[in-house]
Length: 205
Image 1 (cartoon, rainbow, N blue to C red):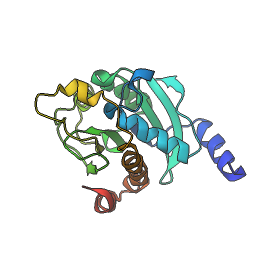
Image 2 (tube, rainbow, N blue to C red):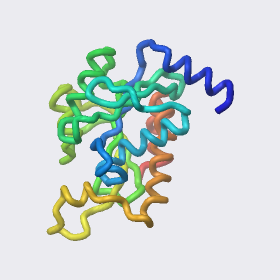
Image 3 (cartoon, rainbow, N blue to C red):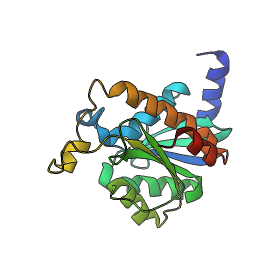
Image 4 (cartoon, helix red, strand yellow):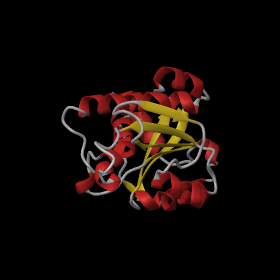
C-alpha cells in the first residue's frame, strides 16, 4: 500500500456521512463461502481488496466498510441477517444515514444469467429473489440501482432451487466469476457518477 492509499484509507474511515450505500447480498458463515448466493459478498470483497479497505465493522445487522468510489464516500454493507432478511440490515443503514433509495446500489446473484454475465438495472421487482424482496418490502422502495451477477441456471428443472443457489462455484467457473466480480466493481464508480448507461454498454449481458 502506498502512502497515498494509506492516507486515503485513514481519511475514508475517519468518519463522516456516506453519500452512497453499496450492498452486497449473501449469507454469513464459512459453510456459505464461494456459494452462488454469495455473489454480492464476493463482489464487495473484490472492491475492498482493490480499495485497500476492509469490511469487518459490525453495524446495522451487517459487516460494514468504507471506500471512496467515483469521488463519493460509500458505505460497503454485507448484511449478516441471512439472505431472506437482507432488508432488516439495509433499512437500518438507510435510515441512520438518511440515504435515499436512488443512492443505493445492490449487488446480487441471478440464476437466469450464465455464470459470469452481468445485468445492470435502475429499478424493478424482486424477480423471485428473496433478498431483493426483503429490501423492497422493508424500505418500501424499488427504484434503486442493481447489479445482477449470473450464477447459472439449475442443472435440470427438478433440481431444488435452494440447493442450487447454496452450491459452491466449480473450479472451472471461478475464473469467470472472479472476472465478473471485477467488472461489477468497475461499474460502481460509473453508476455513482451518473454514468449508468455507460456501465450498461460496457458490461450488460
